[in-house]
Image 1 (cartoon, rainbow, N blue to C red):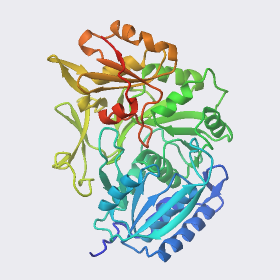
Image 2 (cartoon, helix red, strand yellow):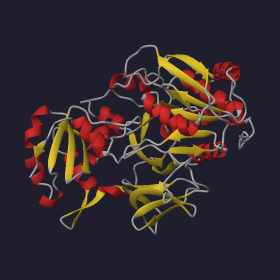
Image 3 (spheres, rainbow, N blue to C red):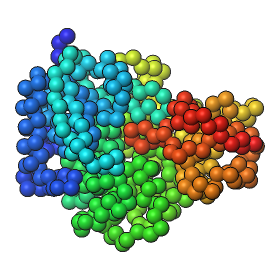
Image 4 (tube, helix red, strand yellow):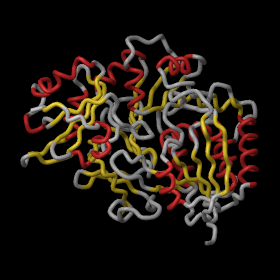
Length: 468
């Protein structure tokens, strides 16, 4: 198989991401890292990858926890002109082996965490670089990612270097993103699209310093925001907002200007708690692994509606949101109905206002079900349940009837949930069963998993409380 030439010349990493004064601190995962130091680390990894056989047009898989070594290897592989596949380090070997059947890497870089516990966001790792019986790149994509798989099996998604650079440029044209000299406190994983492009790549390009808290706790996040005087934007997912909003009070943090979240819509009561605690603006972002950022409301002016990101066509068709793309983002076998005539079917329900162009996301299309001939929006049921006192989080799915999986913040609240729902929801909307779990399953990006089989497995033999 003939290697595919990269879409952009090999200078794009240096020109778009690594340029800047030698002494400027660009990363702060505890110890500050200057641009000169990062360039040195990238050069060292580039030599090591070359020694393992990686060449321009080659393929490499990174199976590493978020770390400085991960960043250096990623940029080094792109600097070489290779195609990089990102695998979450928490995948099982079975999942990795299945991924390798599709991506066929010639080099695999693995990283084992050397301590610090599960709450660490950036890890210290011991790297292993090994040749692998793979093939040169069969496509011109610089990046391959697996979709998050929150509602089903993962897909392989490819993005070219030109596509990544275009998204970084798109960020620069969004009002409210961090600017040069400001800071991005990154809670979202840099292995996945929000933390990768919205955090790492945009931060390096915009010269907004990337700060990584030592651990994913309120105290460590607050310390990361408050330790320097420059304005700080926290980048995360709804889980992180729930975490920060759960505290009774927070210290004054004048540097904390905004938190931007991607993923599910944040419940109104959580938004209120967060803003009461911190006084920071809570911005919302809608995106997909296939596209990156699609629409934003970084000032909270239009909640729950969002403005399409610059250069992103969004339209509504039969209640579904479609996004215009130049080519299909999928690599290998995929559902042919997902990308049709230049439009990606998001499988998200929503509306595009014909007057303003504002986009309102209404949740997954598969959240609309029929019960006894009556339409039920599972998102409405889920938000109602999650808003009850004593409920920490909830997932509602249709699986031989409406099923609710609940994590309690107050164990004493469990016995009264059915009665509380009876005062808020019509009988046909109420869950058939309430399954109480110690923890709800989440995917690698922190999103709640809505796959019925995975939820049943997490609930074990628990039959749940009859909710009628």
